[in-house]
Amino acid sequence: MTKPVVRKLRCAVYTRKSSEEGLEMEFNSLDAQRESCQAYIASQRSEGWVELAERYDDGGFSGGTLERPALKRLLADIENGRVDVIVVYKIDRLSRSLMDFAKLVEVFDRQRVTFVSVTQSFNTTTSMGRLTLNILLSFAQFEREVIGERIRDKFAASRKKGMWMGGCVPLGYRVDKRKLLVQETEAATVRMIFERFVRIGSATTLSRALTAEGVTTRTGKPFDKGVLYKLFRNRVYVGEAVHKGTAYPGEHDAIITRALWDRVHAILRVSPRTRANRTRAGTPALLRGLIFTSTGRAMTPTHTRRHGKLYRYYVSQEVLKCSPNAASVGRVPAGEVEAVVVDQLRQMLRTPEIIVGTWRAARLEIEGLTESDVRVALDRLDPLWDELFPAEQARIVQLLVARVEVSRDGVDIRLRVDGIADLVRDLAERAPHTRKAA
Image (cartoon, rainbow, N blue to C red; front, side):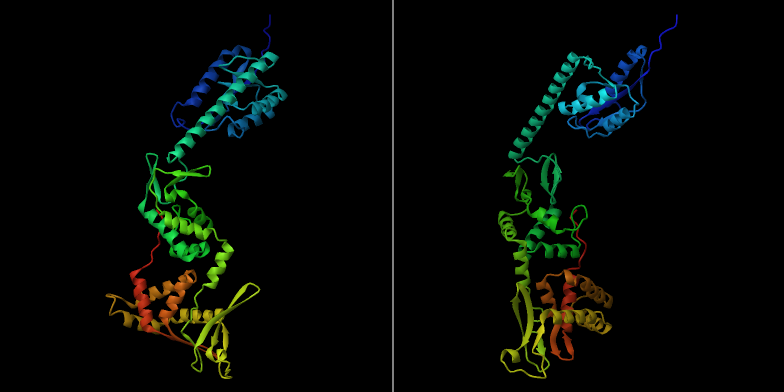
């Protein structure tokens, strides 16, 4: 008598764990699930069950979603006809969502794949088995939602007490035993940024200055406008913990005083366009008190607005007193003449004569100063010029330039060598170095 041929059933074992905790252990939860499933498959060997070598393990993935790499591979193999039976330790390992499980069962039925839970006995081919499955899934989904509510309630209660509940650690702090502690080096950088924003009133200008000075975030990235605005709106810096828009007193120490915080946010409440217009209108005249006509008459900075745009000029006293002189330049655009002066100034600061003269003037007050030191200091100023605040640019021009004469033939500049020496001394005392927030 011949034995009936037993059809081989290819069995795929699927395992899942919601968190990554313990996965690094030699024998973890996934291994325990797989071992139970393998024992069950072995008990059904007489029925033709054969375990597939492919592993479908999702460690650290929630059962409330189908976006899991191993599950996607399993579904792809099912669609390609490579799986006959799916074996799991418990139903909730496959899914904790009733809606998601209904989608999975639809795929299983279409491909004629059997679903088996090792610890829960039922048969999905009967109406009673499907009812049992739906009841079990409903309880699994209910359990997941209750756990989620408990976690959210605990998180909210902890935040109300001002506790740190994890996440990206703000610049200026470090975490020790789940508490935020002030990191003084970074905290000094945060205070400096807040204080300079109050003085400047422009995140764009401040961002450029910080980039030029080499001040970066903890990860080495520059402080662009987005990073600065995020920094200014982080209430952690005034010692508060925020949960869903509500601020509570925090357990940690504040880095920024309430007065400084209020001044920064008073500026932020003004629209960026209005602040930009104020910055432009408040731009100091670089050549105030320095610029003259070829006839020796002083030129006064003035401005006008047309169609909402600001136009700046330097006007001679002859024009202001209505006594035009044909040999003199009466009015020049401020931006153009300032650009010419700055460009000539940059070129002159690199000439050997200026470098030697500056060194001779400054070496008596700066011990050990060499010509090379002077050259390095003046070279350092050139690439930083465009990143300086307007007030700083004006201060340097007033320090370096003795007189600017404007004629129809061009612009003539007279330098103050002693002023250049003062600048070199200032640069030497504040030798710039790349500052990095930890």
